[in-house]
Image 1 (tube, helix red, strand yellow):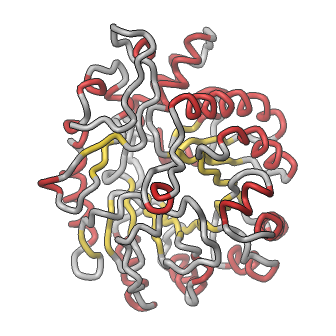
Image 2 (spheres, rainbow, N blue to C red):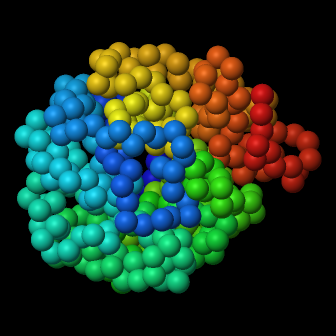
Length: 388
């Protein structure tokens, strides 16, 4: 994650300890896709990839997984899906997480949260709920394939807030909604929600099938709007604006700070250097419903191992050895980039066999040559599908 509010506006947040704490850093962050069940049919769903098993871990094995995560000092486990609230034993798993000292947060569409559910989540020690909004009411309902779900999601947000559960909005940037950034800030301000996470679309699952990938110009417009609104809405209580999934965002912020002669430039540069760029498969992992580990939730085609058959500590160590040098697969343009070490690139491979993998930039770089200090054609952009 890139903390726009911290880097561009100078606003600190409690979650920065996961990004910028160099001494005794916390363990990895885990996304646990605990179920594929869902009450919506989203156009950009990454769970519908054909790779994720429907064979959910039963309660006992799920608890065994959570115990391993706690033993390995995982910083946070994010219960996701599908829709996690469709899993029958979710509350039992959350209660168990609390008992073993594992910090739990939840990623949900919010439509199944009523007053009772919100109070249960708080009572079970859930510290945060990230609730997805895809744009205006019309856009959201269309994306979710469920007319009226925008209203039910807003109701869910209000129930969470009334119960004292911290809430943040999650917005995936696509070529259908990239012009609605300001609408999301306005909505967050009206609901008194201080946190918004903007996710770059990863072209997998339904997102690939429905061709939702933004063009370079669309991505740049979205990022400029995010930065403009982050500064404008900070005084209205929106103090934690983050982007997720594309580490070119760090250099993009630095370039704007430089253009604006901002006194924050050097401090933000130091923070990004301390963070060190893309941490997929190193400080971030995903566990699917069947217990298979992946570098992140969008990389379901490749399994690092199964947590019910292998020790999770060994899986993490093997992954770190595998992915710490993944930047070696980056295209030449990345390797010539002034910001390469700070970004780490967004390299992924599309196959299931690491040895014969086809590495690509996903999502692609949207920075201009002059922004990354490469001489040549001034308006040349990185190829969205750069291959090695």
